[in-house]
Image (cartoon, rainbow, N blue to C red):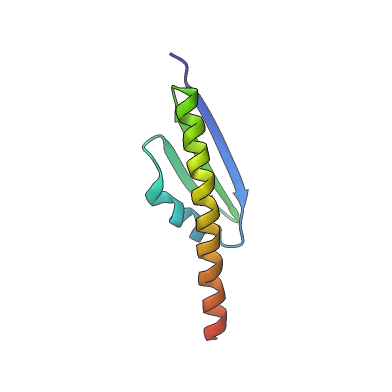
Length: 80
């Protein structure tokens, strides 16, 4: 059986926040960590269609996490 593995690395001002927001939605085949200003997610699987579907879901979740962390940052700035 074929093993598929992919890594997605993105850069964010609040990488820790983005990674924390993504982790609850990770499947067992996914790991997400923050390293400095980067979020690194590894996705593995044995069926290409499943891996592609996981990447698609992850990218949507990533956009939402980035927005959520930006809003949180904006509200913090407004309170100061």
